Length: 307
Ligand code: NAP
Image (cartoon, rainbow, N blue to C red; front, side, top):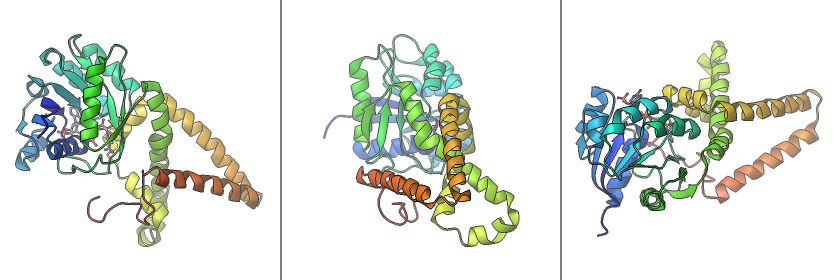
């Protein structure tokens, strides 16, 4: 059997991502020991009850003692306070990483609190579900998904490579990216689409008369997929928008322009324009399926029961 990649891993926050990392590391024998902690006693108790980690610590400071890798798995807005709390307790030579959905704001919040003796290598797995908490995780979450690694100036190549090996061991493919490019890419592929889904579900909810009856009863692929996205964790998504403001506003500005153009095409009966537009967008879908990031199945690859 190959030796673990890290002797001791500490996961701060025990939600969907941390619990999935735990399961995936256990599946691959990637960590000698996994220590976890969460803010509330309820979450720590739940983690103990389901035997999620080898050990559940009562505080973040205690959890990081002696850890070779510390991964911050809390909402983006909570990263700074956690970094401040763990900074003095980190083992020299340890790697600190995170899984936050925004990178520039997390780097700015976390880096100042870390001692020079540790390596800071931010990361972001592009995988998730709308579920939260320690019981939501499963080992396969990262299989064939991307994990973007965001090395910092001065990040030791060995520390970056080791973290990449961990993510690949958990089933992901890795790619390196700068923090600002990451935030723009994610604004297009994830953040703006979530805001649009939230808005669409909000509009349907405003039309209560319809929501109470037809919208739910006849919920077909379009609206149903929006409701799944719009059921995502409110804290996480509030923090994403507050912390990826510029890139999200840039994309939403472009989105609004396109929406007005399509609105105009509908009003003026410009069928050719609509047809050309929808043909172009259909190709995007084909590209995603061909890249293995989704399946052609009518349920968009979501297995029954899991999500
Ligand atoms: P989650 O299931 O909601 O779990 C969040 C965890 O963070 C919980 O253990 C929670 O503790 C803890 N926490 C919340 N607020 C805190 C605070 N102020 N101080 C300390 N701990 C706090 O979240 P998740 O989905 O795993 O997301 C975690 C991170 O991964 C976020 O940064 C998110 O942006 C990123 N991410 C999420 C997804 C996704 O689709 N879900 C995908 C990729 C990356 P308690 O339970 O005790 O409150």
